[in-house]
Figure 1 (cartoon, rainbow, N blue to C red):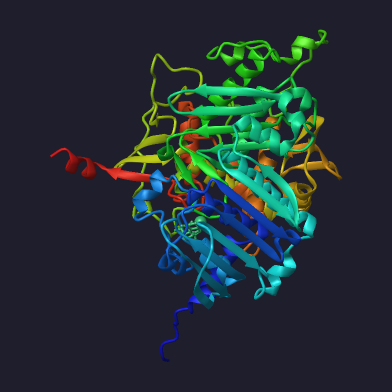
Figure 2 (tube, helix red, strand yellow):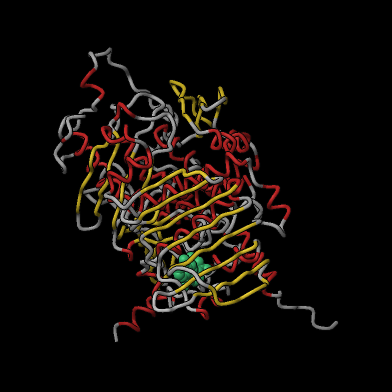
Amino acid sequence: MGDIIQLLPDHVANQIAAGEVVQRPASVVKELLENSIDAGANTIKLIVKEAGKTLIQVIDNGKGMSATDARLSFERHATSKIRSAEDLFSLSTKGFRGEALASIAAIAHVELKTKQDQDELGTLIVIEGSEIKNQEVTVTPTGTSLSIKHLFFNIPARRNFLKSNNVELRHIVDEFHRVALAHPDIEFLMYHNGSESFNLSKSNYRQRVVNIFGNKTNEKLVPVEEETEVLKISGFVGKPEFAKRTRTEQFFFVNNRYIKSPYLNHSINSAFEGLMKDGSHPSYFLNLTVDPKSIDINIHPTKTEIKFDDEHTLYAILRSAVKHSLGQFNIAPVLDFDRDRNLDTPYTFENKRASTPTVEVDRSFNPFQEEKKPIRFNSVSSSYRKEPAAQWESLYVGLESKGTKNDTDFSEVQFESQPESTSLFDDDKSIETKQTTYQLHNKYIISTIKSGMMILDQHRAHQRVLYEGLLKHLTVKESVSQQLLFPLLLEFSSSEMDILQNLKEDLEHTGFVFSSFKENTIEITGVPINVPESEVSIILEQLISDVEQEVPDSNFSATDLLAKSMSKSLAIKTGQSLSPLEQEHLVNSLFACKEPTVSPTDKVTFITMSVDDFDKKFI
Ligand code: ADP
Ligand code: MG
C-alpha cells in the first residue's frame, strides 16, 4: 500500500481551528475588541447588525498595521505579541496565539482597513473563506477597522446552531461589558442595527460601572480595596439590599482579564453570609491583581478559566476584604482583618431574635463503623477502612494497567513496609502507624517508597480518585445520596437551566435528588454522599461554566464532563492542609485507581525520585 497521509490544506486546517475559536458572533466580538486593546487604542467602536449574524465591525484608533503585517495577520500563528514560549509567563496582552484573525477569515467575509500613524495611506484587504480577494492601498484614518460579514457562510451546521437574535445579542453585550469594565480608561461605543446601545466615555472605574448598569447603581456600590503581598483587590461590591436574583452583575477580572471562578464567587457569597435574602446574589465588580507567574491562564482561547497557585489564600483574603468593606460602610459589624474566623458571630444573629436551639445530626455517622472518618475529606469511595493490611493490598490494585505517562515504571513503586509503632505520643487519629507521608506547602504529599520517594500533587491526585468513583456511579447508575434536612433552593438563569436540564439525569445518577425543576429554580432534596450541602451551588456553577466552555461538538460526553467537573470542584485544593491520616488515605486511594498516574485532565499526578537520583545530586 502506498503512502496515504496528506497534510490538510491551510484553509481546511483553519476552518477546523476556527471551530474552537469562534463558537458564535460574541466570540468574534471578544477577539476583535481584545486586538484593539492590544493595539493601544483609546477609542473603540463596535457595530453589530442582526446580533452579529450579518455584520460585526470593530473600529479602533490603535497603532494600525503595515501593509505586510496586515497580510500576515491572517496567517495562522502569526502574532506580534510573543516571540517564545517563555513570554507566555509574563503576558500583558490579551491575545498571543495568533489564531483569531486566521480563524475568523476562514469562516466569514472579512474586510480589513488599517493604517499606521506615520503612513500617508493605509491598506485594504478583503478575504473570504481564507482566500484573499483583494488587497490595495486605501485612504483610511490611523487605526484599524475590521468588518466581519456572513459569519459561518461556509459552515451551515454552525449557522444553524446559532440561537435567536436575542440570545446572540445578549452574548455580544456580555462580552462588550466584560471588556469595557476591564478598561475604563478606553472609550467604547456600541451600535446595534443602526442605533446606539452604549456610549461609554473614558472614565474612572465607578463611573464605568454606573455607565453600563445605570445611574441607580451608583448608590449601591461599596468600594473594596486591599493590598497584600500576593494579591491586590480593587473594585466594588453591591450593598446586600440591592442584590439581584440573577447573577448578571458578577465580575472578576484577574490582571485585566475577565474570568469565571465559582470558587472565588463562593468566597464573596460567604462574606455576604447572613446579609442576603435567600435566592439572591450579591453584585460585584472586582479587579484582582496577582503576579502573572502565579496563575495559569488556560491557553484555550475561549476559556475564561484561570488556575491560581494558591486558591485557598486568595479565597481567604477576598472574603476578609469584602467583609471588611461591608463592615466599614456600616452594612455589617466591623471585623478585624485577621481575626480567627471561628470566633465570628454570623451576621444573621444580629437582626434575629434568639431561636430554639437545634441539634445537628451528622447524617453520615454510622455507629457500626469502627473507624472515625477523616474530617472534610470528600472521598467518593467511602469503602476504605484504615487497616494496614488492606491499605497495602489496595496499592497493588490496578497495577497491571499500562500507559503510565511519566517515565516511571509503575510496577517499581513499592512502599516501605510500615513497622508497628508503639510511640508514647500517638494521637487519636493515627494510633497504630508511624507517619510515612509529609505535606509540603499544603500542596504536595511526599511519601517514602522502596526506591526513594514519591511526590504527589494533592489536588490532582484527589481529582483522579473522585473522578473514577463518580464515573463508576454514573455508569453503574447506582449511587448513594444523603437526604437534606431542608430542601435547598437554587436560582439559575434560563440558559443555565437549559444546561442543567440536559444533565439532570446524569446528576441524579451521582446522587442528586431534585424535587422540582422549573422556571428559574431548582429544589434539591438529596445530594451525593460526601458532598457538603454548602458546596452544592459551587459544584453546579462550575458544571455550568464547564459545559458552556466545552466546544459543543468535540467528543462531548455529558457523563465524562460531569465527572470531571465535579471532581474538580470537590477535590481538596492546593493550600489545604491535610492530617497525616488524610495524606495517607489519599495516597492509598490514588493507587487503588485504574489510572493513578494522571489526573482526569491528563496532568501528571505524582513523580518519583530514586535514591540514585539523590546520590547523583550529592556528589
Ligand atoms: P493575537 O492577538 O493572538 O496575536 P490575532 O489573530 O488576533 O492574534 O491577531 C494577529 C496579529 O494581527 C496581532 O498579533 C496583531 O499584530 C495584528 N492585529 C490584529 N488586530 C489588530 C488591530 N486592531 N490593530 C493592530 N494590529 C492588529
Ligand atoms: Mg487577538
